[in-house]
Image 1 (tube, rainbow, N blue to C red):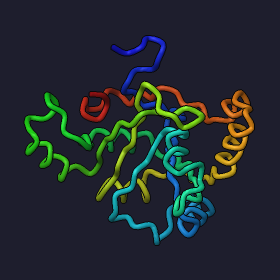
Image 2 (image 1 turned 30 degrees about the vertical axis):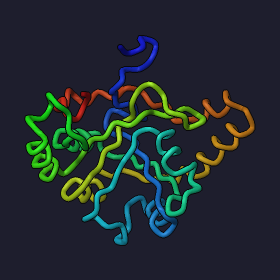
Image 3 (image 1 turned 90 degrees about the horizontal axis):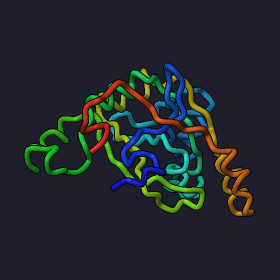
Image 4 (image 1 turned 120 degrees about the horizontal axis):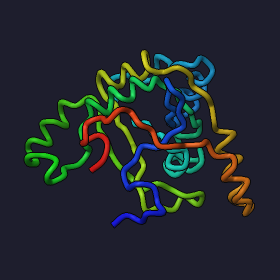
Length: 201
């Protein structure tokens, strides 16, 4: 049973406006710096490959080690169209088989191969990057979804590596209140009841 004091176990939380949602990614400088400078992904960004976007700043910090991991030194905040994220979720498949959601494993595999997006729920993280008792959305985009993300849905791209370093420094200094105050404000995101497979299981 979920703890009533915690957020719902499966809930999309993000920094968002009426028309946009902010997601996070981390890249090597050759990709991340031009993307932030130009506000769009460069030609070197491979649109045919799957790319994973994360609405949670702290989950991104967990994944990239506060921007210290090799190949993930530049942390980007990518503001995308809300309608684009809704489309991706509507056309997504879960990244793993769930009895009761899928007819059987073969049916799930067929659906996964055909889907342009895949949903994965991983434990949300705290300021120390320890797992919490509720989940954070990771959304993988491939094929049509990846191309539309890069060339249609992206509204702006910002380099938030300095923010990552500032929050990390505050955590290491034991200044937890200051660290928490620096975090982007992420609130529940209602996208108008996307398919259950993409929303919660």
